Length: 124
Image (cartoon, rainbow, N blue to C red; front, top):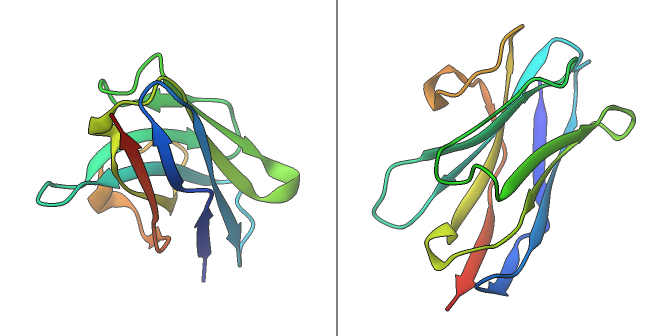
C-alpha cells in the first residue's frame, strides 16, 4: 500500500510563489510515476505535472509550462511542485498521485494512489 501526504498549500498574491510537497511511504518508489493534479470548484480534475521516480523525465500541462517545476528528492521520498508567477486561475486543491509505471503518466484515471489534497489560493 502507498500513502501520499501533501503539504505546503496556502494563500498567496498573484505573481507570487509557493512550493507544495508530497511525501510518499509504504513502498519502494524506484519504478513509480508520480504526478500533480488540481481541481477547482465546479471544474474537472486537471493534469499539472508528472515525473518518473527513477529518472528525470518530466511533463507539464500547457497552463503551467514555464511557471511550475516538478522535482523529487529520492532520499526523502518526497516530490515537490514549485509554483512561480501564480495567477488567480491557479487556485485549486492540488493532489499528488502515484502509479507503478515505467513511463510518465498524465491521465488521472491511470493513477492508483492519491493524497488528500492541499488548498492553494491565489488572490488578485
